[in-house]
Image (cartoon, rainbow, N blue to C red):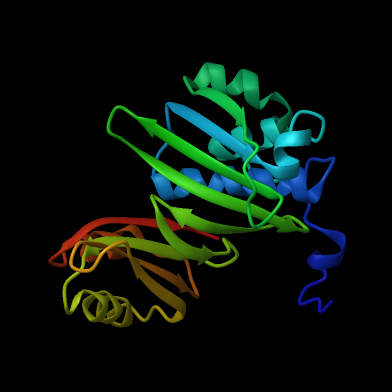
Length: 220
């Protein structure tokens, strides 16, 4: 096995007991919250594989809720996440599933409020690292290890170029980019990982580009 970081071996600074089941779960919850763009009012969390089997004993449940409350992996408040969620008005439900998934540490978070909802599938791949493999039905690969923006848009010519040009105007370098669509000519999704956190004013400019319907970001 090839290690690219010392954290692949010793894991992140975190509230235990497990980097995969606790730190990874907290990061999945926090990324889902970032993509949603605000504090959700409710969450239905579907757990698969070893997450479904051991989520109570390994603290996966409190870590996921802590992430949805914007707690980082090392935040002591993860231990009181259930009580904190009640105070914050966040209702939640855990649903263990029996279906097979590509990775044993998989969670599907369906979160929402009065304005809308979002579905995010995250997997904990070890050492506290995660990947987001699906957002609202769009297949993608998002590590959460770099700042990123997600751009929902109509599947029209020029959208990708216009977004890339806007980032270039602000000297934002693209590290990785992928585009997916569920059906030709309908809705598409850009996932763009960049080298620095994106300022809100840049997101606002991107949101004004024709055919762009929603923009969200993940800071690092």
